[in-house]
Length: 433
Image (cartoon, rainbow, N blue to C red; front, side):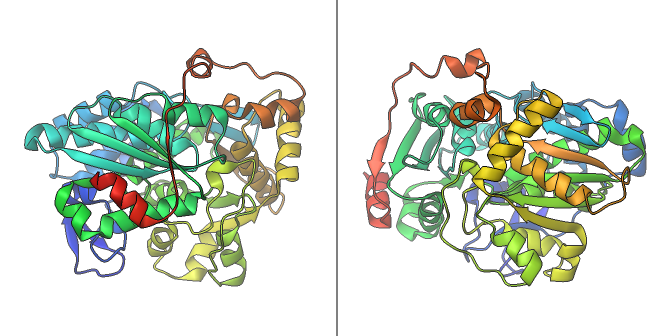
């Protein structure tokens, strides 16, 4: 598996190099030179396979001879002891529950796979690495859980102060050991900018083996593609085109879905559902890409004003606007609309959705309203457990949402974070110190 920079196709890297380097030297993003397709037999029989069997087949197709199949099987078994089930709300509306992992958010799929495959390579090389990750909420908790206490790995998580939920903050600030949380007086975009700048800093890279667990790392997208295949397997019997509605912030999740499509997964259409940080829906309508400072919303994991994976999304479609528009429709929603959707889903289906899932639901219903009834089966990605957003969800549904024990036990743990400003010089001095 050979990858190239999105800025300079001559900058090549093996998967192992891209995994640990995270970003090419020119500040582009790594993309596969060639995307192989899964077999027709695999698609025809996918409904009979477990999540891990699907993940293994997709991985073997992507990696080829890069990693022995027996080793990939061990990586997957170590990473995934949870599934991605679909739940039917009605005949044409399903939610794909991606919150059954340790941090109860979809980021567990990427974080656990990355932790497992990094450990695989580190066992062979005996190197030590320092992972830098920016989070707008769920990534930090998933990375903290996924990499906690792994040998030869140190983790530093940057998050925007006051802009994540209480439970999200506890997930990334209470573990300690090899996990450190930096609480920035800024936005997620500020956190992301510091991480990117660190990877381009010569002094830091000479002293540390830096790596990223953000979706800028191609190894995050690969495992996220697994659950698109798994979702298709569960609704395939309907015999209808499948439409995926993806709550979107940094656009790694949607890019992973497009990767699955490029590998041969039959996808009827994608919906990019955002909150008021609507740079991509505006682009899909106007053709003008205009990043803006991020706006704080109740669906905080999507509060991204300059999504890193937009470049990848474009590249998957040959950097052609008309190709993207043929495959992706964008919608954006306000906090009021999101709250109303949480209430509507609870009343209509007796199902409690987190704010991000509610945004995805709105996008799915908006797209389906443009179609003839029964023309497709819709799958909305449920990206986090609703209990991670109690203040919003309980007010919307009118009752107390049950809190799983793994989240409840976090609430009494002391928070440990290091306050920091948004200047790179401060961040660099901290790392060097």
